[in-house]
Length: 232
Image 1 (tube, rainbow, N blue to C red):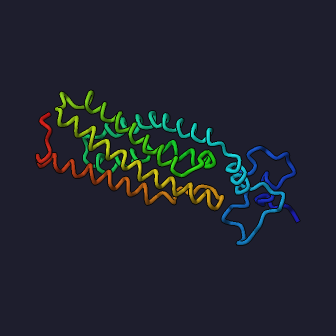
Image 2 (image 1 turned 90 degrees about the vertical axis):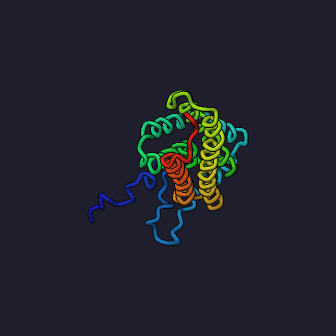
Protein backbone atom coordinates (compact mmCIF):
# COMPACT_ATOMS: atom_id res chain seq x y z
CA UNK A 1 0.00 0.00 0.00
CA UNK A 2 1.48 3.37 -0.98
CA UNK A 3 2.35 5.70 1.89
CA UNK A 4 -0.03 8.58 2.47
CA UNK A 5 1.93 11.77 1.62
CA UNK A 6 -0.22 13.71 4.09
CA UNK A 7 0.31 11.37 7.01
CA UNK A 8 1.24 12.99 10.32
CA UNK A 9 3.90 10.32 10.70
CA UNK A 10 6.03 12.29 8.26
CA UNK A 11 6.27 15.05 10.85
CA UNK A 12 9.84 15.62 12.12
CA UNK A 13 8.81 14.64 15.63
CA UNK A 14 8.17 11.08 14.43
CA UNK A 15 11.43 10.75 12.51
CA UNK A 16 14.62 9.20 13.82
CA UNK A 17 16.45 12.49 13.65
CA UNK A 18 18.64 14.18 16.24
CA UNK A 19 16.39 16.02 18.65
CA UNK A 20 16.58 19.77 18.28
CA UNK A 21 16.73 21.88 21.41
CA UNK A 22 13.26 23.20 20.75
CA UNK A 23 11.72 19.84 19.80
CA UNK A 24 9.39 19.93 22.81
CA UNK A 25 7.98 23.27 21.69
CA UNK A 26 6.88 21.77 18.38
CA UNK A 27 5.55 18.44 19.61
CA UNK A 28 2.19 17.15 18.41
CA UNK A 29 0.95 15.45 21.58
CA UNK A 30 -0.94 18.52 22.79
CA UNK A 31 -2.79 18.96 19.51
CA UNK A 32 -6.59 19.06 20.00
CA UNK A 33 -7.11 16.67 17.07
CA UNK A 34 -5.64 13.70 18.93
CA UNK A 35 -8.00 11.08 20.31
CA UNK A 36 -9.18 11.78 23.88
CA UNK A 37 -6.89 10.12 26.37
CA UNK A 38 -4.05 9.66 23.89
CA UNK A 39 -0.74 9.59 25.74
CA UNK A 40 2.71 10.21 24.29
CA UNK A 41 5.41 7.54 24.56
CA UNK A 42 7.47 7.65 27.73
CA UNK A 43 10.51 8.92 25.83
CA UNK A 44 8.62 11.64 23.97
CA UNK A 45 9.57 15.26 24.51
CA UNK A 46 6.43 17.20 25.39
CA UNK A 47 5.67 20.86 25.91
CA UNK A 48 4.23 20.04 29.31
CA UNK A 49 7.48 18.40 30.31
CA UNK A 50 9.42 21.37 28.99
CA UNK A 51 7.40 23.79 31.13
CA UNK A 52 7.82 21.65 34.23
CA UNK A 53 11.56 21.58 33.77
CA UNK A 54 11.86 25.27 32.88
CA UNK A 55 9.85 26.40 35.89
CA UNK A 56 11.73 23.99 38.16
CA UNK A 57 15.00 25.59 37.10
CA UNK A 58 13.68 29.15 36.86
CA UNK A 59 15.99 31.83 38.19
CA UNK A 60 14.29 34.66 40.14
CA UNK A 61 17.09 37.00 39.10
CA UNK A 62 16.61 36.26 35.39
CA UNK A 63 12.85 36.49 35.78
CA UNK A 64 12.95 39.95 37.34
CA UNK A 65 15.53 41.01 34.76
CA UNK A 66 12.98 40.02 32.10
CA UNK A 67 10.34 42.10 33.87
CA UNK A 68 12.67 45.10 33.96
CA UNK A 69 13.49 44.67 30.27
CA UNK A 70 9.81 44.50 29.34
CA UNK A 71 9.12 47.61 31.39
CA UNK A 72 11.79 49.43 29.36
CA UNK A 73 10.45 47.98 26.11
CA UNK A 74 7.05 49.44 26.96
CA UNK A 75 8.42 52.81 25.86
CA UNK A 76 8.80 52.09 22.11
CA UNK A 77 5.46 50.28 21.97
CA UNK A 78 3.83 53.17 23.81
CA UNK A 79 5.30 55.70 21.38
CA UNK A 80 3.91 53.80 18.39
CA UNK A 81 0.47 53.47 19.98
CA UNK A 82 0.41 57.12 21.02
CA UNK A 83 1.37 58.36 17.56
CA UNK A 84 -1.18 56.11 15.87
CA UNK A 85 -3.89 57.38 18.18
CA UNK A 86 -3.11 61.08 18.20
CA UNK A 87 -2.79 61.22 14.43
CA UNK A 88 -6.48 60.34 14.18
CA UNK A 89 -7.70 62.10 17.30
CA UNK A 90 -9.73 64.69 15.42
CA UNK A 91 -12.25 62.03 14.40
CA UNK A 92 -14.78 61.11 17.08
CA UNK A 93 -15.11 57.55 15.82
CA UNK A 94 -11.36 57.05 15.95
CA UNK A 95 -11.10 58.51 19.44
CA UNK A 96 -13.96 56.45 20.86
CA UNK A 97 -13.49 53.09 19.10
CA UNK A 98 -10.17 52.78 17.30
CA UNK A 99 -7.95 54.53 19.85
CA UNK A 100 -8.90 52.33 22.84
CA UNK A 101 -8.36 49.20 20.77
CA UNK A 102 -4.95 50.29 19.45
CA UNK A 103 -3.73 51.69 22.76
CA UNK A 104 -4.73 48.85 25.04
CA UNK A 105 -3.27 46.23 22.70
CA UNK A 106 -0.16 48.32 22.16
CA UNK A 107 0.51 48.81 25.87
CA UNK A 108 0.29 45.07 26.57
CA UNK A 109 1.98 43.86 23.38
CA UNK A 110 5.48 43.24 24.75
CA UNK A 111 4.50 41.24 27.86
CA UNK A 112 1.80 39.36 25.93
CA UNK A 113 4.23 38.20 23.23
CA UNK A 114 6.79 37.19 25.84
CA UNK A 115 4.18 35.29 27.85
CA UNK A 116 2.95 33.43 24.78
CA UNK A 117 6.45 32.41 23.69
CA UNK A 118 8.27 31.99 27.01
CA UNK A 119 5.76 31.69 29.89
CA UNK A 120 8.48 30.26 32.13
CA UNK A 121 10.26 33.60 32.09
CA UNK A 122 7.76 34.67 34.74
CA UNK A 123 7.76 33.13 38.21
CA UNK A 124 4.65 35.00 39.31
CA UNK A 125 1.53 36.29 37.58
CA UNK A 126 1.94 39.54 39.54
CA UNK A 127 5.01 40.30 37.44
CA UNK A 128 2.81 40.61 34.36
CA UNK A 129 0.50 43.02 36.17
CA UNK A 130 3.49 45.16 37.17
CA UNK A 131 4.82 45.24 33.60
CA UNK A 132 1.43 46.34 32.23
CA UNK A 133 1.08 49.05 34.88
CA UNK A 134 4.56 50.32 34.00
CA UNK A 135 3.62 50.28 30.31
CA UNK A 136 0.47 52.27 31.04
CA UNK A 137 2.45 54.84 33.01
CA UNK A 138 5.05 55.18 30.24
CA UNK A 139 2.32 55.54 27.64
CA UNK A 140 0.45 58.18 29.67
CA UNK A 141 3.66 60.16 30.20
CA UNK A 142 4.53 60.17 26.50
CA UNK A 143 0.99 61.05 25.45
CA UNK A 144 0.77 63.86 28.00
CA UNK A 145 4.03 65.35 26.77
CA UNK A 146 2.82 65.16 23.16
CA UNK A 147 -0.41 66.98 23.98
CA UNK A 148 1.07 69.59 26.29
CA UNK A 149 4.07 70.46 24.12
CA UNK A 150 3.01 69.64 20.57
CA UNK A 151 -0.70 69.11 19.91
CA UNK A 152 -2.26 71.80 22.12
CA UNK A 153 -1.36 75.46 21.69
CA UNK A 154 -0.63 77.18 25.01
CA UNK A 155 -2.37 74.66 27.30
CA UNK A 156 -3.81 76.05 30.54
CA UNK A 157 -2.74 74.92 34.00
CA UNK A 158 -6.13 73.24 34.47
CA UNK A 159 -5.68 71.26 31.27
CA UNK A 160 -2.19 70.15 32.30
CA UNK A 161 -3.50 69.06 35.70
CA UNK A 162 -6.30 67.10 34.03
CA UNK A 163 -3.89 65.26 31.76
CA UNK A 164 -1.39 64.39 34.50
CA UNK A 165 -4.07 63.23 36.92
CA UNK A 166 -7.21 61.91 35.20
CA UNK A 167 -5.67 60.80 31.90
CA UNK A 168 -2.72 59.15 33.62
CA UNK A 169 -5.05 57.31 36.02
CA UNK A 170 -7.14 56.13 33.06
CA UNK A 171 -4.18 54.65 31.18
CA UNK A 172 -2.67 53.02 34.25
CA UNK A 173 -6.05 51.64 35.31
CA UNK A 174 -6.83 50.15 31.90
CA UNK A 175 -3.36 48.63 31.72
CA UNK A 176 -3.91 47.16 35.18
CA UNK A 177 -7.06 45.43 33.91
CA UNK A 178 -5.17 44.06 30.88
CA UNK A 179 -2.39 42.92 33.21
CA UNK A 180 -4.89 40.93 35.27
CA UNK A 181 -5.88 39.21 32.04
CA UNK A 182 -2.27 38.25 31.34
CA UNK A 183 -1.98 37.02 34.91
CA UNK A 184 -4.97 34.75 34.28
CA UNK A 185 -3.24 33.28 31.21
CA UNK A 186 -0.08 32.65 33.23
CA UNK A 187 -1.91 31.07 36.16
CA UNK A 188 -3.67 28.57 33.88
CA UNK A 189 -0.45 27.69 32.04
CA UNK A 190 1.45 27.32 35.31
CA UNK A 191 -1.19 25.18 36.99
CA UNK A 192 -1.78 22.82 34.05
CA UNK A 193 1.60 23.05 32.28
CA UNK A 194 -0.13 23.86 29.01
CA UNK A 195 0.49 26.38 26.26
CA UNK A 196 -0.65 29.91 27.20
CA UNK A 197 -4.22 30.45 26.03
CA UNK A 198 -4.55 34.09 24.97
CA UNK A 199 -8.34 33.81 24.82
CA UNK A 200 -8.43 33.65 28.62
CA UNK A 201 -7.58 37.37 28.70
CA UNK A 202 -10.16 38.42 26.10
CA UNK A 203 -12.75 39.62 28.62
CA UNK A 204 -10.12 41.70 30.44
CA UNK A 205 -8.95 43.40 27.25
CA UNK A 206 -12.55 44.07 26.24
CA UNK A 207 -13.25 45.59 29.66
CA UNK A 208 -10.19 47.85 29.37
CA UNK A 209 -11.18 48.94 25.86
CA UNK A 210 -14.80 49.61 26.84
CA UNK A 211 -13.73 51.65 29.88
CA UNK A 212 -11.29 53.63 27.76
CA UNK A 213 -13.81 54.17 24.98
CA UNK A 214 -16.51 55.25 27.46
CA UNK A 215 -14.13 57.83 28.94
CA UNK A 216 -13.25 59.19 25.49
CA UNK A 217 -16.93 59.36 24.55
CA UNK A 218 -17.81 61.20 27.76
CA UNK A 219 -15.03 63.73 27.28
CA UNK A 220 -16.03 64.25 23.65
CA UNK A 221 -19.67 64.90 24.58
CA UNK A 222 -18.74 67.25 27.41
CA UNK A 223 -16.42 69.21 25.13
CA UNK A 224 -19.11 69.49 22.46
CA UNK A 225 -21.65 70.70 25.02
CA UNK A 226 -19.11 73.17 26.45
CA UNK A 227 -19.43 71.56 29.89
CA UNK A 228 -15.75 70.71 29.87
CA UNK A 229 -13.34 73.51 29.08
CA UNK A 230 -9.92 74.44 30.33
CA UNK A 231 -9.58 77.90 28.86
CA UNK A 232 -7.07 76.81 26.25
